[in-house]
Length: 223
Image 1 (tube, rainbow, N blue to C red):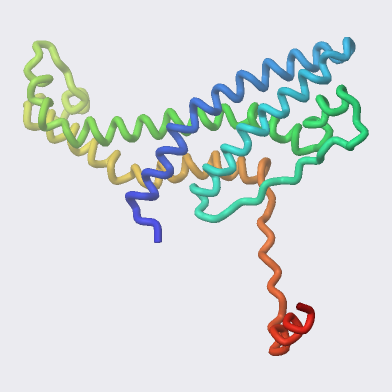
Image 2 (image 1 turned 120 degrees about the vertical axis):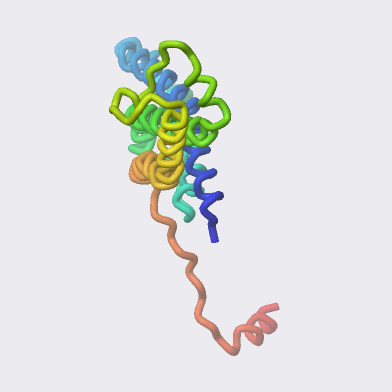
């Protein structure tokens, strides 16, 4: 059973660690699609689109692994069609875009990027707010001693004392810490749900053969 600590670690890793991959994937796919579609008339656009789809497939495979960890159940990989044995070089280069899933992989790289940015920003904000707030008693009194320092408690009319300043900001940090698990979980699920819809297929359960008391006997006779 997944503990709360493991769940927060998994969701945080997906939201923060997946952001660089989403950024690189977005940049490569958008530039590749623009170059490929723009040069289709010159034929060279076909292998460019094929290479772009192949790159998107690699990122999609990584995304599927992370999604399975976030959702806590295996996800199915779509079937990518192979090029016919008699296909020429151009046909083989274009094969990654021959099926619908290749286009879905590229489309996901584009659509998922804004969600990756949102997930990264919100998750990072909540972690910084929780850590900075809970540790505020260690350094808050130093900030309160800075001449002309006006904190949020003073602006809200709660007072300008050092104790009020420290207690208020520590309480804000505690609020971030309490709401951290559901917020980070929600951000992870936003990305994972989109990836599940575009990049995965339902996992078919293994078909179990019916039990037969004569199975061993028949196997021995065949041998």
